Image 1 (cartoon, helix red, strand yellow):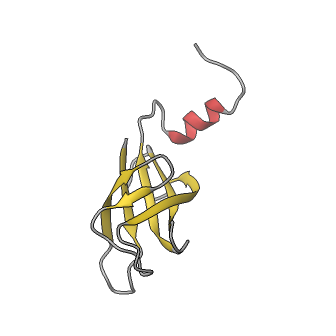
Image 2 (spheres, rainbow, N blue to C red):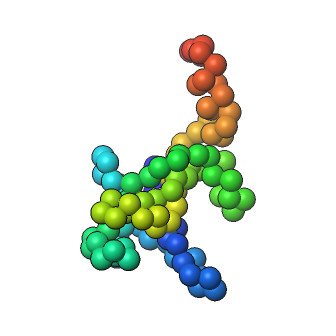
Length: 101
């Protein structure tokens, strides 16, 4: 699984990404500190969804990233996972209530 975060930027600034060091409940954002001063900054994700970013493949989830110290929105966490048919089809199959062996 590949993880990364796209950080909030001010209007006119280029997108900034950072590496994540995932943990059970939060991920450390490498080399970045939050506006609240948290250093190192840890984030957790909320609102998991399939990414609609056209630049990404069909195998990427995204979630809103919030700082665990101040609960401020700091960006979007991306997680690229292995999939057979794409996340939408995999989720449809998993939610049908039948097992395919």
